Length: 233
Image 1 (spheres, one colour):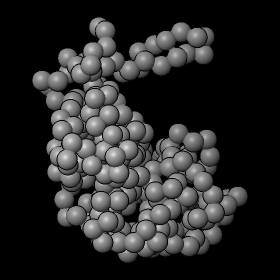
Image 2: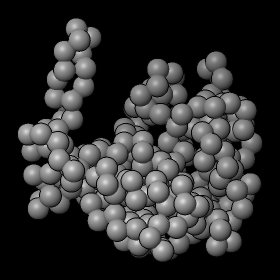
Image 3: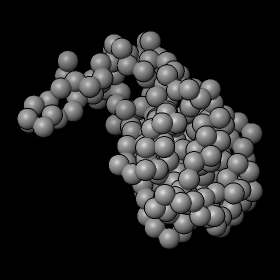
């Protein structure tokens, strides 16, 4: 099927700027400052350690700013490092209903139980930091991450096709997902008909979990370009 104006895509890491906006809404309302240690709000991050050549060293505080800028020392399961392997072993990739974690809270506690790849604030490492910030949004706002995004960003901006899953009535608009192969062919890696995005995930991933249309994302991007306002909202 050909692409249409209302085709729904996996936003993957374009979820991150939306999570960033949610965090900054709460910052602007005075709930925290960016230099606050994340452990003030998520106590599981109180005593972190850095993995260094097979040994664990005590780490300093991870701040909200570190998480926003990928300098927290957290990592990703797809990175080829010893800590990346620990993430894979812990099944941290938040894949829909298949996640072993029943909530973002449970998932975040699992992340906090693993070592860091670098001391906070010393090195840039692409990471699950934005997913952890989704949990910060929940703790500070008292709402689920999805509810907060809907109430404060998606509904006000008219982003009506942006969510953590694709409901039955919208599946006909959901794009197939293709990937190149080493021999320069293209294969389908995820069929909309059997996609994990057909159901609400147990872990609402602020780092890569959203789906939406190009038109929805344009409204979000234009709001940012306008300094925080789109069509009077």
